Length: 61
Image 1 (tube, rainbow, N blue to C red):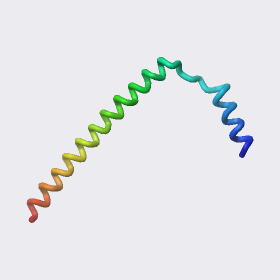
Image 2 (image 1 turned 180 degrees about the vertical axis):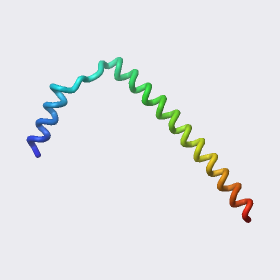
Image 3 (image 1 turned 120 degrees about the vertical axis):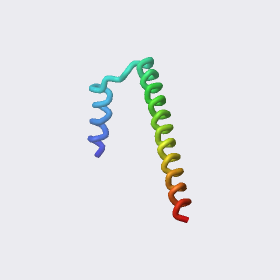
Image 4 (image 1 turned 120 degrees about the horizontal axis):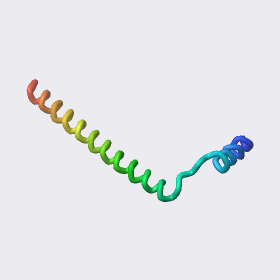
């Protein structure tokens, strides 16, 4: 297990290409924007389905 952790850190240090600070910030903004858009879409679908279900149950009562 200790060898696995040691090799994992070595892999991260030697073989992974890390983005620059500016590129990382730009990617973070892209992720934040898409996260906000996705959460708004989920909220909209949830609201519409909630209203449809409420309308359906109001009709059968």
